[in-house]
Length: 182
Image 1 (cartoon, one colour):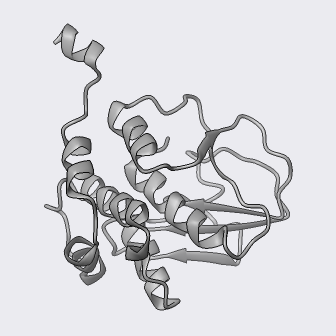
Image 2 (cartoon, helix red, strand yellow):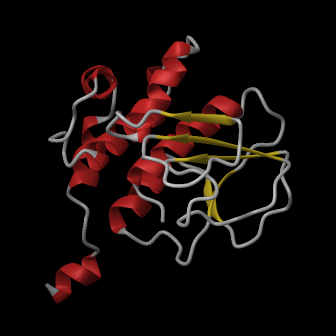
């Protein structure tokens, strides 16, 4: 399933790749489409061009973020090459030689932010990306209470994010329909 960290990491990687690769798409799959109010609002407010797919024409590269291709929670699509960026402990065999897994990071957003920094890319140049990465870290570290790696602290402390958007997203865990029920 997709969560804020997954969407944020994918968005940052997408923005990086779209200036370097001819055809790049940001997609997700799974049993259900994204419906959580905070995620749908994040996608809308930050202009994230993500699409839900059930099928995928065989791409030259399938890059997964916040998960590793071959794990049980990842939809299997055929591709010429596979790559992964993640921060979780890998339980099975990694099916690719192209991967970046930093298990001691609190979020994949922190991994991607650090990788961009290592490439000389300032993610703060894109306010939507900076806000997404900050929110991904916030959500994956329980409101920053589970931060331990310096890269997590760097993202928290130096992201030039939109305060208003973060406040809206933090307070949007229930839809209006769910609030009526409550």
